[in-house]
Image 1 (cartoon, one colour):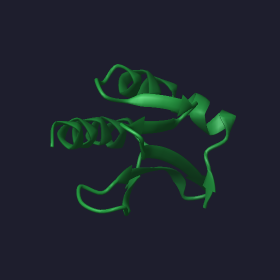
Image 2: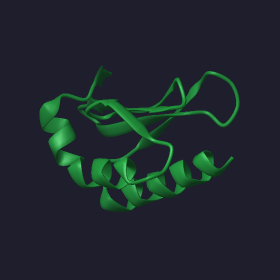
Image 3: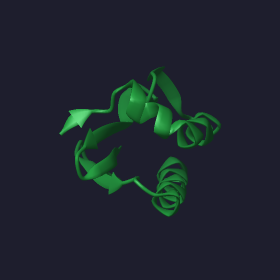
Length: 86
């Protein structure tokens, strides 16, 4: 699964705008977000759809979320907000 290219990120632009507005999120490169000094969230594209990798609540692993639909993107924003508060 490859990192999301410009066309995939264009499809996610509304999600990216919402993520940029969250406190504590720093976008180092388009679609690649950091929290403090650690990578926190980035995106992948695959024939199966678009996916987000979000740093797990504990440890250095990432959890993968399907963000192919509007509902999935809204669910990701809620999850990111919870992780930022933790």
